[in-house]
Image (tube, rainbow, N blue to C red; front, side, top):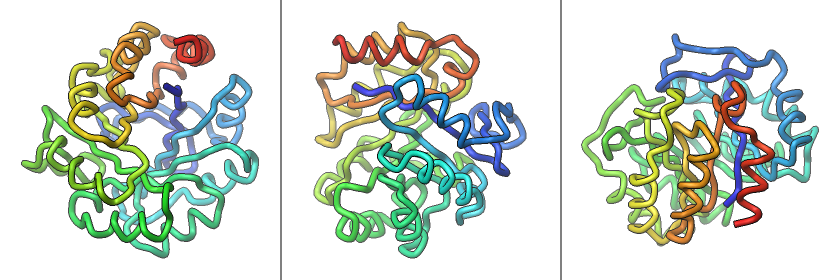
Length: 243
């Protein structure tokens, strides 16, 4: 299992939201590329980027910050989500050096888009499923559906999706601990590797996920915890490598 630092981009800054609320923002850096360098210096093997403006507006807004990071670290796998709603946007990100595209809202509203992307960019497509009490939410978590996350995940097994980023909205940014049970249950119900997200707070969360990693939990995204110091990124990654 790999620990993946999150860099959430809003108006060119590195921020974190609480439960996806744009009005509840904490700014951690005015220079996302410098923040990326910090995590790379501590041994990050992959970075998780989110264009928060893009998630709400349906188009890239922080593309320049993304390009700054991919140019600075051309050999580092970078995954990006937020506002990838058509093939042109996807192609632009791939050409800019992004390794993986995370498709969230479009995966729910237009699953055929995921199939198309997987065919054009094999091995580079991740589906982002955000859920509250097991039900998928879209549009930067602004809209709740009646679709269960496990049902939707099974639809992508034949497309060649490289992994699923599963976020428990109720935990995200709240420093309340990751929902290990829900993450493990999803991993058991699909053949697609699961990347845990939302609520990771301490090394105990990493330990709990590692105990379930044999079910198919391949990574864990962490943001606020490593920025505020409740989780030591280097120690968390070392624990994963020892497991």
